[in-house]
Image 1 (cartoon, rainbow, N blue to C red):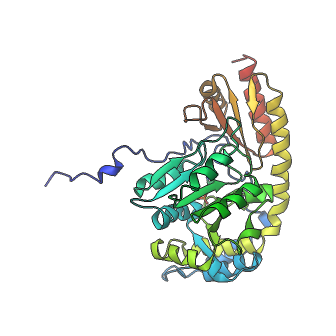
Image 2: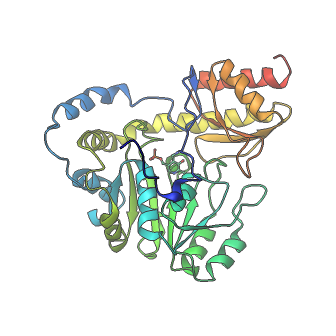
Image 3: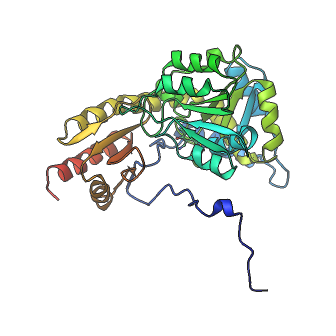
Length: 356
Ligand code: PMP
C-alpha cells in the first residue's frame, strides 16, 4: 500500500524545533561553554568510558551520580532525578503535570520549548507576558494563579533569552499563593550563584531544574537534573523513558561532577567577560543591550536580521530572535572566549558604523 494515514492532527500547526545551529568559526548562538572539559580531566574521562560495558543496560536512575548530586545539595537520593538533558525533563514535566484539560502558565518571552511541550501534550498555555524591560509581571502572575486553575508554572531564573534573575521574594510569594507545581529553571545557575534551593524542603510545590550543558561544558553529552520532593519525583518516574540517561553520559557526568571545582576558573572568566561584552555593546551606537546574570546577552538594534547575516558572513554565529514575538529586533550573543568576544564586537561595530 502506498498510502499513509495522517499523523495526529495536533501536529498540523507545529514546526520542528530548529536551533539554527549553522557551522561557523565563532559559535556564540547556543549558550554553550566556550571551553571543552579541562585537559586535566580528559584522561580520567577516557578511563571511565573504557570501563562502561556496552552490552549492558545502564542503571535506569543513574543512582551513583544521583547520590553525588543529592549529597552536594544536602538531600537524599529520592529528591533527585537525572534526565537526558534538561530538555527531556521539561518534556516529562508537560507529560506529568500537563495534558488534556490542564493548564501551564508561561511568561513569554522565555525558553520556547516550554510552550511547545505544552502544545504537544494538549496542555492549555496561559501566557502572562513580561514587562517591556523583560521583568516578570509579578502582580499579573499572582492574580492569575489565584484563580486556582493553573497546574504548573515555569519561572526561568536567569531567563533565557533575556538574561535576568527572577526576584526571590516573588518566587516565594508565588509558591505560597498556589498549589500548582512551580518549576524554577536554573539552567544558568552557576553564572549567577543564586538559587531557590533553600525553599525546597518547606515548599512541596517547588521543583528546580539544573543542567550540565552550560557551566560544565557538557552540551554534547545530554545530562540535566531535577531537585524536588520525593513524591513529586515519583510522579516523574511514571512518565520518563526508563533508560534515557545512557551509561556513557552517567560515566562522564560522574567524573565531571566529582571534579566540578575545576570548572570554576572558566565560569569566573565567563562572568568577567560578560561585563566586558556588556560594556562593548553599550558603546556601539544604535545598540540597546539588556543586563544579564547568565552566560549570554540579549541586545536590540535596527536591522537586526541584516546584522545577524553580516556577523555570519564574517564567521560569527549568534542567535536571531528578530522575528520572534516580543523579541522583535533582538539578537542574543553567548559569552565566548576573550578572543571570540573581541571578534564579535569588532564585526558588529563595523556593521553599525556602516563599513559593510
Ligand atoms: N532551560 C533553559 C532555560 C535553557 O536555556 C536550556 C538550554 N537551552 C535548557 C533548559 C535545556 O538544556 P539542556 O537540555 O541542554 O540541559
